[in-house]
Image (cartoon, rainbow, N blue to C red; front, side, top):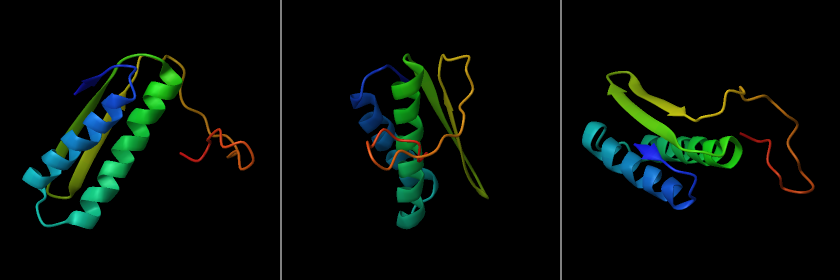
Length: 92
C-alpha cells in the first residue's frame, strides 16, 4: 500500500492489515490486533515525522508476519525520552 501524508491513510492501513490477516492468519484475533496496532503506530510515525508519502508492505509466512514501512526521510529514527508532561510522544 502506498500512503500519503493524510491521517485517513492510517485508518486505511489498519483496515487493509485486518483484511490481510483475516486471509492469511484466520482465527488469531489477539495476534491480529497486535499487528494492526504496530502497523497503525508505524504508519502514523512515518506520516507525522517524515512528512511525505510512504509504503506499507505485509508479508505472511509460517512463523508470523513481516511488516515494512518506508518513508521519504533520509534521517534515521532515533530514541528519545518519552514526554510524560506535554504528550508529544517518544513512546514508539
